[in-house]
Length: 480
Image 1: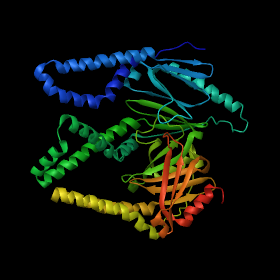
Image 2: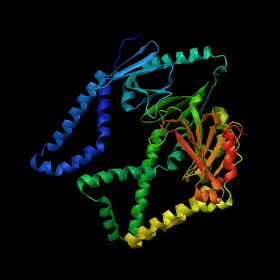
Image 3: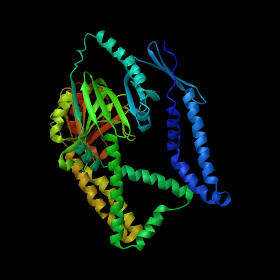
Image 4: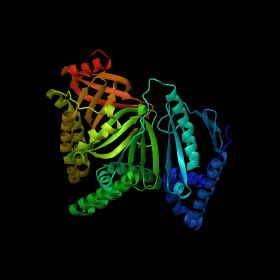
């Protein structure tokens, strides 16, 4: 039995920053809303408000640090925390799949790391987390978990011995810049700005969109186009910076039955992925990368992972590879997913099903924009053309292929996605056929695999030949 330990005191500051970061948008909006009235009465009121925020967040940070303890006892990692409600979390080391660490700038200044424990039943969030401990203590916890793995291997004569050789791939700086330039993260930035402006509209009573629209009407068409292009360029550069910070110094290596990933510039992250937790392999080619033969490789991990994106349950295994490098990459790190698919594709009569609904929606949207915005609405006409192009590409890219144990599904949203799944990893299999598909003898295939979400990750290929869909169902049911 080990004695109870507390985190490093710098966790007080980290907790303060987290509380302020989580509340920064509503606080900023409230500050702007109150500033006009309060400053008329008391010039010092903004500084008092900032002081109150710092004092309250500091008090909560101290209580959080004081009430947070952890220890290793027998076969459990025990974590107790909570300012008002005491939470006790006892995690058996036999349930722990990986122990991951990360370090932001403050962590690195004090030689600390944040430790996250992933278990079989965990979701996207880590089952256990210690925000600030020394590297030595983190290594002790990792060794505490490793003893479980060593004993399990010694008692399991059916498992092959762990290989000690180490294979690694690193992301070069040139490849990092290419990944950043083609990441397609502009849409995420626009989504974030939209959420902020919506809240600002409600609180401050300023309609930002109306203001921008009225301003654009007063400008020439050329200036309006330059404004739009400039806005896109700015968000593209912001997305580039974010990708560079996230994937700088990216390295993936394999040793024995585990993958190790390191990445990050301002925040360094290290994570471990046991190979048996990989449920599916995903290869993504977005519209900026596909013409150059570039792609990203990610995996669906059972129980979640510490490197997942906020809007996805996938863990990136390599941010950017050439298509010609993929086979070698998989041979070295994930040989069970190496396959040359021979796709069963949708028949020609399925093309109309791919085109019909998206085209109708894009025409309606364009019509509404033209009705309300007149000449400016005509700028949406390319949307109809793009919809037809992407729908046609969705038809051309779709397909399924399978071997004795591996199912491959390919489909397109905006990005072309190829998914490889072992039959034993498929959690649920669905075959569906709506009325219009039945008239054309078409069907849709869907599968689900375990991952960080409560519902897992789902993939589907639409409008396949009815017989092909039946053949895949027979394959899954071991009837062929």
